[in-house]
Structures are given as C-alpha cells and as structure tokens.
Image (cartoon, rainbow, N blue to C red; front, side):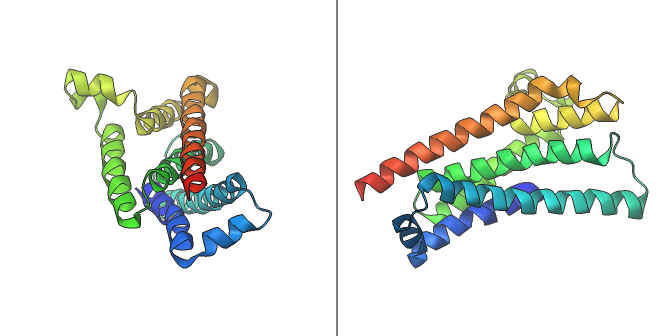
Amino acid sequence: MFAFMRAMNGSAVISRDKERGIYSRILISSISLEKYFLGNLLSTIIVVVFQSIISIYLITKVTGIEFGGNLAEISFILLLLSLVSVTLSNFFISITDNKEVSNILSTFVAIFLLMGGIVPVEFLPELASKLSYLIPTRWTIDCLLTLQMGNSLNDCILKIMMMIGFSVLLFLISMNLVKRKDNKI
C-alpha cells in the first residue's frame, strides 16, 4: 500500500507543476518531455524503494519476523512493484488533466490491485482466481512466495519480465498520450 500511495504522491508532482506553470517552463528549456517524466519516475521509485527497504529491515529487526529470501532479492521485487506503481500513477496523470480524478482512479486501481495480491488464490472464486494472474501485485506476491520457499529469483524470471514489460508499456503509452495532448495545446 505504501508503494501505491507514494507513487500517487510522486505523480501528483506533475499535476502540481502543471497548475503552477512549472511544467511549461521546464518543457521550454532543453529538457525533453521523456526526460521530465523519466526524472519524476526515477525519483519517485527511489523514494518508494528506500521506504520499502527501511520498513522491511525494521520489521525484521524489531519483530524478528523473517520474510524468506535475502534483503537484496526482496528489495529487487519491491523495486519492480514500485516501477509498476509509479508508471501506473503516471498513466493516470496522462489520461486526465484533473489531479483529483487521477487520485481517485489511482486509489481505486490500487485497492483493486492490492486485493488481487493479498487474498490467497485458493480463497477466490474460479474466475477471480484466473483473473488475478493478470494483475502485477499477484506477480509480486508469487515472486515473494517463491523466495520464501527457498527458491531463487531465477524461478521468478517470467513474472519479473512481465512486471518490467507492463511498466515499459505503460510508460510508452503515457508518453504518447502526453505528447498528443501537448501538441494540441
């Protein structure tokens, strides 16, 4: 949930920049639209991953709970989840000009995505169980479970590639939408 909420806050910077006129001034400079969005994406991912790693470290040290897998592997999976979260939030920013609508969409989808990853597959109705395998949070949970069973990241390679592909696709779609909007202005 932290990843999705922080991703929404990071993407909201784009909306605030537009409201304050900063966005236009940045794009008048030599910085391209892709670099601006990529900068926002990377800075938000760094903050989300940092928060996740600190949280996991503190939970392990304070409570003694072991997550399975080592911190580097878990951090890598959380990095991918952060990438998905941020590109999804940027996508919502690109399809709407209204910050509030974007936040509502992001919150709704975040809750939907979290439900797809938190509820064990065996408790879901058959259709929902099948649909949950199309959701990035399910891929993340499956990777974390794989690590907890003592397997390596190599056993998650398909889901890792799906998370990366999903994020790249969302980023490219977002850039295309933003370029079209900006060209109309």
